Length: 178
Image (cartoon, rainbow, N blue to C red):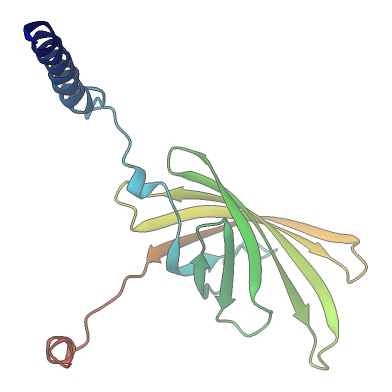
């Protein structure tokens, strides 16, 4: 009986030592001064964007505002505010520390609602350290309805701000309702 009690005690001590060592590992395995905050490594959410485009004569065209929603599965959709094109549909991937790559597509119609062009966007994104702003550049490839490349327009840039939920004035009263 003493032998089995000693074996149980020894097993308990080894297990306690392992648990104690394991408790120290989570505290020491991450170098906090070198860790990259993963919360800022995603684009998921809704953003307000302003796109700046150069004109062919070197001046800057009016900015185009848009609401853009990035999904967790790598898709995104944008609703541009200039009224000349359809919503833009695209995909994004993370390619580095707060750096992302994206592509998107939209259609343009004339006054008679006939399809005139399809635009393919190639996009570089840079997320700020706090995860609240985004900036980048775009290259637009203009295609005919038949898929023939008509023009490639580099040099556009954008800035975005991440939107967040806001508390309405009646929030606290509403929370008291059954």
